[in-house]
Length: 224
Image 1: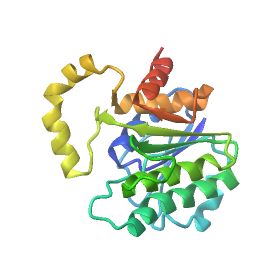
Image 2: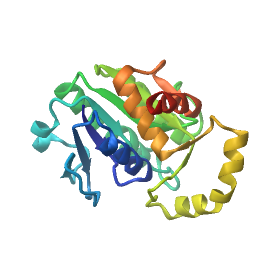
Image 3: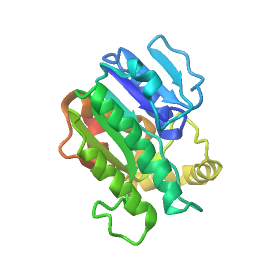
Image 4: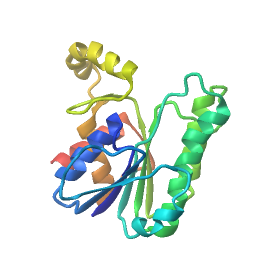
């Protein structure tokens, strides 16, 4: 399969990229982002693209792909709803609507977050915006759309660019074995997220909205 990854320099995106490059049935990985990944692999092709709201100049490079793993995301702390909407909903839909037109047979997987509100009625701004983004994606004419509502994800072999996240995972690392024992379906690793995405492209997923236990089950299916 040929796949596109957005956000391949972020913590989740780095993990997804690693799993795609290691997968025997992945022939080409195209990464799209403002900065290069720094990775080198015969399967890897990188497009450094400045305007993430406009793909007119690179449309020829976006045809005939089997999957898109959209891993761009960030915290809403300190943002107005207008700014967060532009960086979350508008940016995601700019890419997704372009791909739906150019590669409609692909599976599109969006990394969201637990707590996103599909009703779009909550008073919490980021929950509404995330839910609105999910709803818009599910209406697009792809072969399949899956929303990964992730909770806690352990970085394995990758590093978050966000200082606060790096400190958090450093402090939490000694507790992770205990947390995994207590909540085996609730804590994911970056390899599990990547494997679950590949499994969803290969043979589908049981439902469009997937949270940590569902993603965990998909990853186990892929790793058998």
